Image (tube, rainbow, N blue to C red; front, top):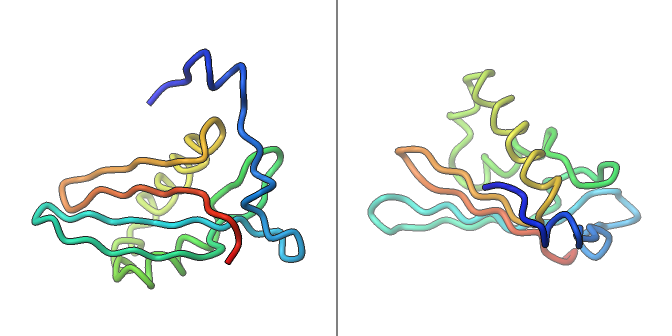
Length: 112
């Protein structure tokens, strides 16, 4: 994914997705497996950043809820995922990740 002229001209506002009292940002994470099976988790997994959300320790909570925690044993992968999520969230309220085991789509949602 790359920035489009529309992304640059009209950056998104993360405020509607932020729980101001906690300073966390809510999202829904959809995991799709090659066989078509899916898992979904929704929560305040992101931290409010400046100016856009960032993924910190919430990666562990989301991974646990999705049954993917064992993948985070690889510290390099852990950091790589956080960095890529932060990069994509710096310009859009959606993240797309993929590997041979599954695809992930993360969408920002209003606090629940």
